[in-house]
Length: 449
Image (cartoon, rainbow, N blue to C red; front, side, top):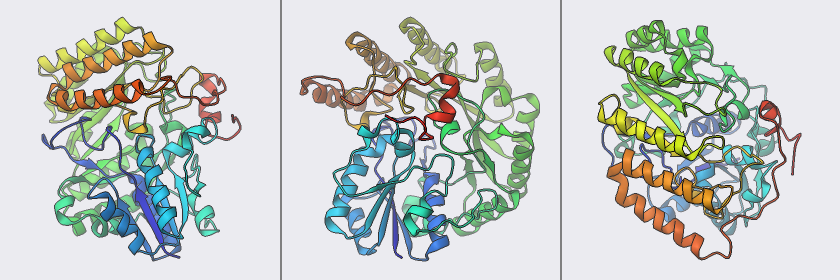
């Protein structure tokens, strides 16, 4: 069986940081989707004839021709929500130009298939794959069988990187590994606790994986793409042991509360250079990890003394936050930049995007490429105008170097809305689910529209 795995072109919310960056600088690198490593490795378990095409590099038609030249029996598209426009385009093209069977999965499908299926409509004959709770769920649908594969012992195959990206592209990508999946926190807007069961990789498997990246590609740094690095302390310690023994610089993401003096010291000792921390919003009750401003700034300074950069992530427009509170937080972000606590290229600051289905959301009828950058949900037109103003403030205040590009994207977004009879997307309403039950119900299939 011949299989091609496709990663579609991400919209304006790109794999580079910050979003809408017009040039690659300040050490920015492209984050390879870890879904590709696991999709490739799982497919290779069943067949040697497996290839990957990443539509975020190169010309569309050249990439499509690569897909066709492999003469696939099956094409697997792993789609995020903000790459779903590209997914639809590729899906239609594949079914028009190839007899291959088409499968579409990934976060876009897992988060929407049961509660917002209208969003996933594709003008092509395809089979949707819902991977919630099991990263190996593709196998049964694609290959007709599912061997007893376990995340802990499964050995990823990263040879696809050398086959997919030429050397001049590999200089611009970030080598990543995943050492655990799932999340014990239950922030209502986040996919991490809802898509996969919690699992931890065997340190011996990680050791082989890192050594391969070093030996084959000369990797001198690796990003640990776990949703929550310190989810289990013993596993985190074992992971840091492996990275220290490999002598490789590394980065990670975690929650502020885990950045104790002891953990920071151990991170620095083992070569950690930066950590992405989800602050999101200091006052929202939608978040299962409350953060105080004083604690945040204390940890910023403690980490900096050890040579570790904390890269905070913020969200504006959460459903339980007043407009004035959002404005105050954006102004605060500008102040920490001006005070030299965090450079703006180490900050993520985005508008709330309803990746998780919520009965409170009223979606706007705009293409998926705007998700993560422009407002795509609001309660009414006044609320939409306030959210649009928050976006204006974010890009003017936090990322002024992207202002020209932002204005272009903003104008395109408004032009699309102006051409419609109504700005609101018509789809079946999402059933109300209490926050404490979302982790069990939203992507389980037990609740459907």
